[in-house]
Length: 223
Image: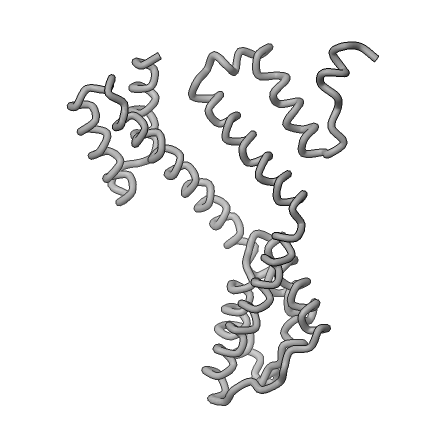
């Protein structure tokens, strides 16, 4: 075995291997010299580290799954009461708990949430299919219901993804703006302009690219 392979063993985990490949290409392709691009490589590395941590700490994920199941049941009971003007008195069984876990997993994999699914069930599906009223938990966890929901809401998934990416972009740019505002080497006039641009971006008055251009310009001056 070579010394290089001893220092940098190939990880067994696929995500780790992916990140190792990305990092190995940074210097050869000069990405480390392009600050605006390299910044997102660093963010990607942090996301990978979070992913690995969460998978290694399965206990915390199990707790999250239990919270999602309790949340699903609570929302179902609330919407059931609103729909039929009567409380849902059936106590959820362990089997129903596993069904809910499966449903939440499927809709999350599709880019949606258990809350999205219940909203669709009570606001759209049940009013159009009154033969299923009053509903029960086992019934609404049926694969046919879930598949119909994912099919009908496939357009919303792309919108959610775009909104999620934009939200992370805004957060990243806001953090970089605040770092520049705290930097004593940045002139007060520039800090004032940054504050104005950041405020306009969060209120939707200017596009993100305008703020990004300003931030990258200031960051370039400080290098």
